Every structure is written in C-alpha cells, then in structure tokens.
Length: 488
Image (tube, rainbow, N blue to C red; front, side, top):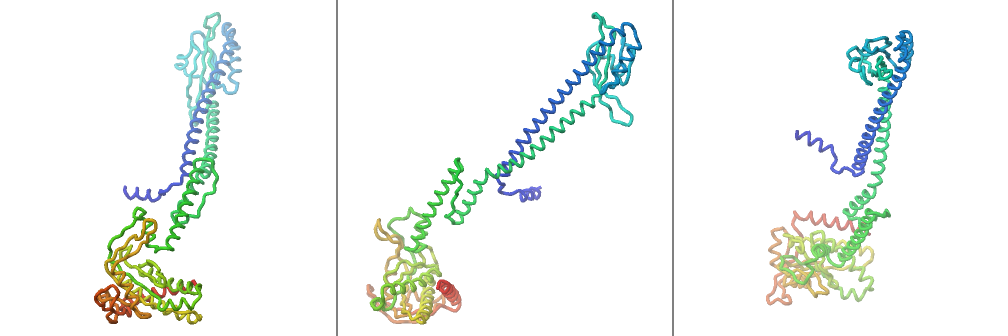
C-alpha cells in the first residue's frame, strides 16, 4: 500500500501549475452546468413530447367518438369497420377498437391491449402504457387511449386507439443526443477557453515567479514591465521597488567591501545591531608587509608611477591573504597589515599567516622578474608576523569607526617587520615554537631590542614550509599567477 502511494506521489508533481488548476475548475464548472442544463432540457423535452402524444391521442380519440356515435346507435357494423380501418391506416396508429356499452368488442383493427387491461380503463378517459413482445424483435413500447362514447349523457360504447410510443421515444433520444452533443462541444470549447484564460491569468504570476528566482540567484537587474491596473500590477510595482532597493544595497556592499575587507563587510552588514564601538579579545595572527626603501622610491618616481606600483604589489598580497583565509586589515602608506583568525575563527591562523608570508615573497619575486623584463621599477618587502591575544572590534569614534585589531601582539608584528631584511620573514621565538610542529623551516636570526620592549627578543627567519604543505603553496601560487596573466 505504501509503495503504491509513493509511486502515485512520485507521478504527481509537487508544484501543480495554477493555470491547470484554473482550467480544471473552469472545466468542472462548465461541465456541471452543461450537464445540468442538458438534463433539464432532456426532461423538459420528454415532458413536451409526452404532452403532445396525450393531446394528439385524445384529439383523435374524440374525433373517433364523434364519428362512431351515430353508427354505434344504429348498430351499423359496416360503418364502424370503415371508421376503424381508416383510422388504423394512419401513420403512428397501431390499433383501433370499438366496444359496446357492455364493454364487448364490436370491431378492432391492429394491436390493442388484452381484455383485462382494457377492462381497467374503459368507462373513463384514460391513458395506458403497455408492451407487446414481437417475434424476433425487442418488445414494442405502446400507449393506448380510451374514451367513452356518450349520447345525451348516456354511454353508448367505448373507443380505443393504440399509438406507437417508439416514435416519441426516438424523438426523445434524438433530442437527448443533440443536447449531449452540444454539451460535449461546449465542454471541449470550455476546456480550450479555460486553458487559454488560465494561461493568460497566470502569465503575470509566472513573471513574478521568474523574477523571484532571478532575485534569489542574485540578479537584481530584473524588472517587470507589464503595466497592469489591478492587484497583480501593484505587486509587480512593489517587486520592482524591492529589487531596486536590493540592487542599491548590493552596490553599497560592493563599494563598502572595496574600502574594508569583504569578511569584515560581511560580518558588519550581517548584524547591524553590533555596529558600535567596542571589541573582544581573540587569539589571532597579524602580518605586516613593508616595502623596503619606499621613501627613496617615492622621491624618484612620479606619483602616478608610485600609485601604479603600490596597486600592483598590494593586489597580489590581497590575493595571497584571501587564499589562506586572511584579509587586509588596512594599508598604512607602503605597508599592508594582514589579519588571520578574525572576524572568522581559524584554529590554524598562525600557520596560515606563515604560509601566506612565504607565498607573498615568492609572488614578489615572480612579479619583480616580470617588471624587470618590462623595464619597470622593482621593490622588495620585509615581513613580520606575530600571534597572540589581541583586541578585535570597532575602534575610533561613533561617527567614524574602523574594524581592526590592536594590542601588544600587533605592535610586536609591526616591530618585527621594521627589523627584517629585504625579502625576509621575521617571527619571534614563541611563534617559531608553535610553527615547528607544522614543519615550517626557520633559522635563528638575531636577538633584537624592539621598541617598547624591555627585554631583547630572539627572532627567527621563516625560510619555507614543510614538504607536506609545499603543494598548498604551489597551488596558491599557480592560482594567483594564472589570474594575473589573464588580467594582463
């Protein structure tokens, strides 16, 4: 039973078009109306035919009684036989009979009911339906009319006429057939008209559905142009206004994401109730990538050249950050600040920061080769990385705030970047201890006195990642370089 139900459910569509529903409803209404109308017409036609038969029978019977009154009083057998024979020859009359005042048969011609049937009707104006089986044929439907023959209020005899009822039944069947054919034709026309009308009525609904699907897919350029002066037109105009609002919102988000990290933009726009000053302590990693000798370069190059140089190098740095789940927190002149592990949690933020730094230096090396072939100025970056607890949140003023991270761990990363050599990646001893289990290759650099720190800090240079993670670096490099080639 369940399998049969499931099969039927599988055959029946989940979303049954409203055009079909309207067509079915209209068809049922038309069919029901025409069927009732057909039954009424057929019934009325049947009553009319029966009434015509009764009126015709009584009229002929009354004339027969008038013609037979005098011959019956005179006992003129010949005249009575002539009257009976003439009437029996008329079309539609199957039998004629005359009876005396004692209900005894005088003369008959054709088919008449049996004696018992006649005895029940003689003496009054009556109608009697009866059947007579014919040999080798279906039973014939007949109707007989009887009427007393009176002279000066004295009954002198009785007259009987039998009509072929099949003629009226045939006419009735033909009438029913005609009504049925007309009903069927109108039902077919109604089905066609209802489907056309249903399609026309549901066309704006289909447009709304298609527009809704396009909006769900992120296409906010869709517009409904059907100018209707009804509720659907009002709904279409409301949807157009909603789509325009969503398009403006998307443009704001895209513009906002150009000024802040897409991750930060997503976090801020996702919960507008949290757009307020304040933050929370998180364990994250910070990377500073600083151009070596930028002040000298900016004095030598035209401002447009400086702008083009920064945009090209910072572009690949942003792509590298995105490849490892980080984001650009801000640009500080010739320095890019990258954050990993916030606002989205990343348990491997320290390794991803180190892998990103290795990738950046490799990308810078490849970019410098390309720029050298083009006769353009090349630069080198020094990078500092640190991990630890820091405050992440909205900093600044209520009128102008910035989502960023601050704290001692951030300051140490900036100091390490300033102390690194060109092309080097510098970390402290604590981070080096965390990275060694991941196979990160490093070398002890020197012990430095960092500004703001009382004790000297032992630093290490990150040289590469382990063998098992080198494929990750290569894939990221290949992906970024292929994109840059297509853009070029």
